[in-house]
Amino acid sequence: MSEIRYKLHPISAFLNFIKGLKELIFPFIIIFGVNLFRGGGETVAERGVQDLIPVFIGAAVLVFMLVSGLIKWRRFVYWFEEDELRIEYGLFVKKKRYIPFERIQSLNYTEGIFHRPFGLVKVKVETAGTGKIGQAEVELTAISREDADRIEKKMEHAKHHSREPMLEAEEAIEEEVRGLPSKTVKTVYRMSLKELIILATTSGGIGVVISAVAVFLSQFADLIPYDAIYQEVVLFLRFGYLIVALLIFLILLVAWIISIVLAIFANYQFTITTDEDHIFISRGLLEKKKVSVPFKRIQGIQISQNPLREWFGYATVTVESAGGTFGDKDEKIRLFPLAKKTTILPILKELFPDMEWEPVMRRAPKRSLHFFYRLDFFWMFPVAGLISYFFYPYGLFSLIIFPIVILFAVWQHRTVGYALADRQLTMEFRTVSKHAFFMMKKRIQAIEVTQSYFQRRKDLASIQATIKSGMLGATARIEHMEKEDASKVLAWYEPSDNKTADLQK
Image (cartoon, rainbow, N blue to C red; front, side, top):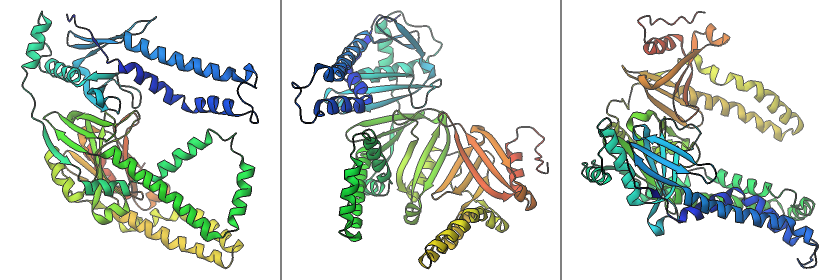
């Protein structure tokens, strides 16, 4: 039994306070801002005490959050016992959590701006039983790098000696852990400055920035003087549409620059390292993050290319994993945020030698082409007709949408396809971006074949494969393939000897 109890660093109390404050930032801005500065220019002393009650309540909440953070830090301890990571926390209700080292899938590290000056890290313990999206089994808010390495070594010791008797003395255990041979860690990829700049400028983060600003402003919808703004906008429009267009361009330019800076901060020094059991991905400038992905948890690989990146030969590679995320949400783990496809493929072959990365794809038949665009006519005809009628003759330009949609459908038709190997299914399709899913047979959760009434008349079918990824899974779907191809995929996937798929019913 271990007698050593380890505590979090004292800065954990402050970090807990900051975390709670972030969740209440908008209510606090309203409470402190609106209540202190409203009142037609009256000072705080000239107003009644009752007007300051919301401020007192807000201040009390702040004090409570600070005290709560201190108590959480003081009562949180962890130790090692019987090949388990054990944790105890809580003031009035003590809670204990025992996590066998065998169940721990990965330890993910984060170094924020408050961690790095003290040489600390935040450790997220991911297990096979992690249930909620993006939520770790255990989070150690701030511990030293030495303590984080101790947890990792204890975990490796337990996994390599899972059924051996425990040593009687803690000192003997520590000595054995220190004596374990260290795994060989190899760096397989480091993002160059050129790739980082291209990633930042083509990331599409401008939409995220604009959405964040819109969400922020929505919190003050009741305080915004829309009538006055409307009058100002009407006055401004008198200067001409060119000035308005320039202003919109400048706003979008600023949002784009902000998205570039955020992307550079998030992916700075992106590095991939591996040992025999894990892939380690680290990135970040202000906040360094490191996630470990066990090879055995990887369910599939997705290679994606938006049209611009496809044109220049760049791609993004996403790991579909049954555990492990970047951040507090169910964020997909990007093995390559952006790299040349010629650079990606040799590394993927090295990391996953059992998979085929350049298979010969079987494409959709020519007779299925019109299935990719004919449903769009149901909305294109009335829209184009109404625009042409009410805005004649300029509305006739709306007819350009027909060749555009048909060309896009041809583009999709030429992309969709699949490839079968003994133990692997590869599916390729296009939304706007091109996606290729690489899945091992043993990792596929389900394969579904569907046929609409019109597909049955043309002997066509759609094929969908699902693998476990996060909480909802990841799905690849190829539309309007030969019925015979769908039968082959079903027969390949069926575990029984009877591998005949009847699609007549």
